[in-house]
Amino acid sequence: MFTTNPFTPLTDFVSAEVMQGYVVLMVLAVVIGTLFDLLHDKKLAFFLQERQRTRAAAKQPLSGADLAAIATRTLVNDIATFGEFCNQQRRISHVLMFYGFVLYLVTTVVMVFVYPTDTHPPLVLPVLWNIGVLLTLVGGYWFFFLLRVNVTHDGHPPWRLVRADLFIVTLLASVTFALLFEVVAMAGSSMATKVFAGLYVFFTTLLFVSIPWSKFAHMFYKPVVAFQKRVEEADGSSSLPTPTAPRGERCPHSHT
Image (cartoon, rainbow, N blue to C red; front, side, top):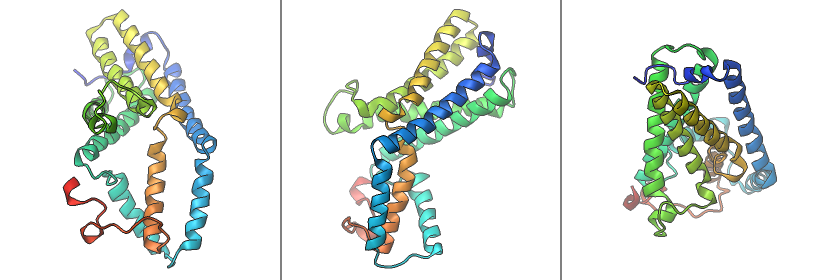
């Protein structure tokens, strides 16, 4: 159980080429949606202008070694472990979602393109796929029901949705129906398999084509913004106040 290729049942009613073409289209949707978001909302122009301003305001030059060290700290603290969050629960939930989603995506691509009709690919692939799904769901539902700002701080019920929730809702719906599709396919119900496959494809498509209106693209912006922020702190061009926490920490101990 949960050790077979979850996409093999799809080949009963669509070809492997169709599945592969769909994945390519979703990749294009991510690229196009992110570019549209950058250009339509003038994020790219703002970033370039801000970079020009900070270069002019820099008080000390940074060497290549300095920039490499800053990039390493950004990767370890801001990207790999979501150090931007002072609240440890939010941080952990995002770590679970991020690594789970990446694991789910990578194993999906490998099974769809390399083993589309192989019910029993290398065992590690379906196992990692299911682990990725479960990590995404645990972190995602934890965040959705207990950690969203409008729920924890504004007192709104968790089912009250706003535009900012589009990404988390479509992500959870897509991955939830991926798991349900796998379960009903293993149960051998042809009609239920088609229904849940359709729901899985619908919400997955919505997840990827809604990038210009959701927070999906933020996962691409945040590494750049985090790196730029650390560069500004190092070269003295930052317009933000100096951290007042002990040893220059960004988060006070009460939030950790």
